[in-house]
Length: 323
Ligand code: NAP
Ligand code: GDD
Image (cartoon, rainbow, N blue to C red; front, side):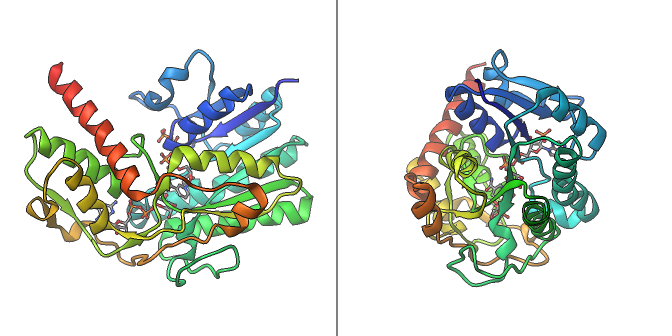
């Protein structure tokens, strides 16, 4: 029997890599796409013949129920979210609706249609917030943004559906993961895209906020494999997914500019618009449980990640120049 998967947030960075992975594994893959006035399917356009896309939104439970009933997925990967931490300070209520309540809606929809399926909840290392590193599955949560608070709510809702209703729901507590498909507002892609534009002569400066923030950056393509592994386990649990390595935003900039032979200090300038009312200073994950129970381990670390992202942005900028 062909397995069926439903992905919310299929048009995002992770949704696109996960779609590729599941299609490779022979799944019938369905995705929920928001209706927008301009196209939002660029990241999955190359999969358009294989992928089955449906209009929907995690703020509309009736639509979720209908789709679940029609598709009858074996696995649901709930990735949809307002995922920009800085933006969550400007839109706290909307972030709560989508990032927090969206999880309740998808779980309740599954329960109401009485579907026997396994669910992945896209939890986040942002939940640890001000708790000191290294962070693992037992580290207390201390959310520092409306986004982190919404994800913490969603995490506990996922746990509660597991405990109260016996549903198979796994929380992947993922640390920052990046790729050439990363949204342009996140700091890594903002840097690598700027490097490519500066190298091509289009821009002269890059404005950033807090360069001292420490993150544990991994490669998104590898992280979606951990999502899948969580839903193949004997029983549902919560897993930290991280590399265990630590770099500052400054380190990332140094590597990205250095890759094309530039000195970051000549181009990066400070702009307080990119500071946050409350910052998360240091996230460094301890992925030992995930390694021991799921056999997952990251391979690509920050220097290689920065290089492969710059490489792809150089290709994009040069292709635009050729047009
Ligand atoms: P992303 O690129 O921002 O993708 C988010 C996805 O959610 C997009 O497909 C977006 O659709 C969709 N979406 C937003 N609001 C929606 C709504 N109301 N209804 C339906 N879909 C909606 O995020 P990502 O990096 O792939 O991350 C995937 C998930 O993992 C998110 O939940 C994120 O919060 C979480 N997470 C990410 C990281 C990371 O480092 N990347 C780490 C921990 C957790 P549009 O394309 O139309 O905008
Ligand atoms: N976005 C951005 N833009 N961040 C900047 C900038 C800038 O110009 N300058 C410095 N930073 C710092 C931020 O203050 C933060 O400390 C760090 O760079 C990383 O910011 P982001 O790339 O925006 O990611 P994030 O860590 O806030 O959140 C991402 O990772 C979470 C997992 O830990 C997102 O993908 C979240 O959705 C995810 O849950």
